[in-house]
Image (cartoon, rainbow, N blue to C red; front, side, top):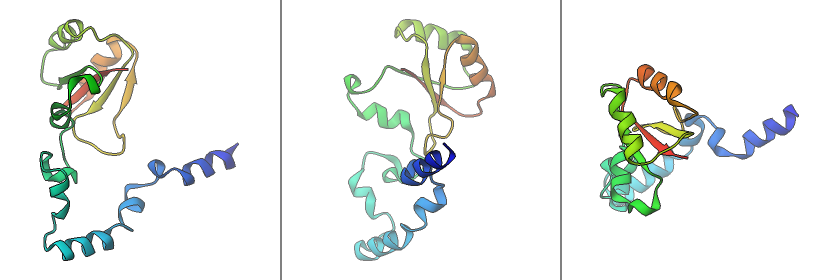
Length: 137
């Protein structure tokens, strides 16, 4: 069973470390930057997304660009707003548990969790030091 699990992790890049994914791409990025005469050559592909989507882009800002019928119901929240306001927003958008909660800024699924009830959501908010999104599952 361990061998099967290990082979699965090797065959699927989403399990690889960030370093092992981006280091081999660095020479390609340099080549493309040289050809385009700008380090931000990719920005033209995503002009509406901060930094062209390379890093530190807000998921909320990206979701705001997408028609609502193409994405799950989503609430923007932070550790600084009262939990009661989050509850009222959940009720107004008719979002039921379980929910998916993810940091507004992040990569490779880090910090993404499925929460089963209000207690888990309140704990997530209390332990969060960044803005986050709550989505219907």
